[in-house]
Picture 1 (cartoon, helix red, strand yellow):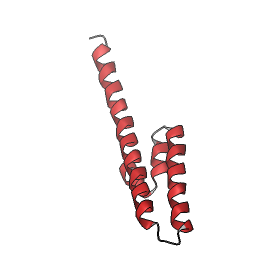
Picture 2 (tube, helix red, strand yellow):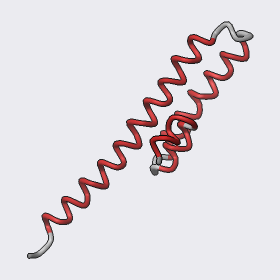
Picture 3 (cartoon, rainbow, N blue to C red):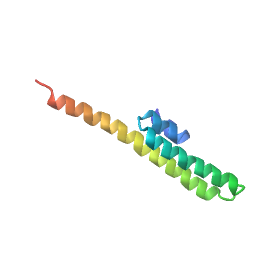
Length: 83
């Protein structure tokens, strides 16, 4: 579910995966893309698209990393448990 949120609203997905400072960075990138789009009267849509894709990629990697951390933590706890 977070992957879908990462495509639509990347900073929210980063925030929901527990990384508030990275969410702020992602939000700054997204605002920069929107300012470029508005400031260039639509002529900067190429660079806006590239920045938007960078925001999505950052969100996807962050969500995947947080899920991987949870899997690693569960595996570590299972291996260190007393049998």
